[in-house]
Length: 113
Image (cartoon, helix red, strand yellow):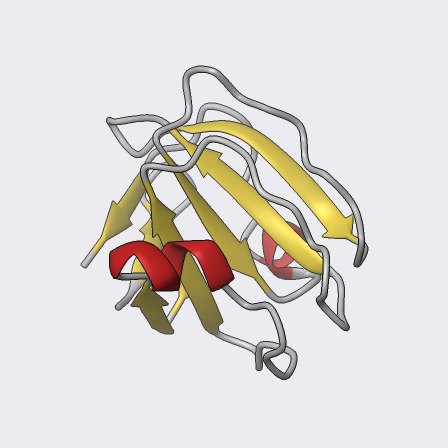
């Protein structure tokens, strides 16, 4: 999966994947090694996340149905509960620094292949 910030013309993810099924959504990145640069995990039908049982921090983008960024968390540390974004319909978990590197801000529109 590839994610491009159409608003900024920057690449967010070049080697991502989409969580599938009940277990994929439930487990997410729990117990997994840190994401390498360029990676990401899209969690559809999700408007908040937690980082319990994780060993690394994440950048997180919260996306509405139009794939517009409605919330973001930079360097969300392990064992935290993220903020609930009522208008979000998906979250994108990323390596720390991805939000800044891709210059992504609130209101940006993402293209997900």
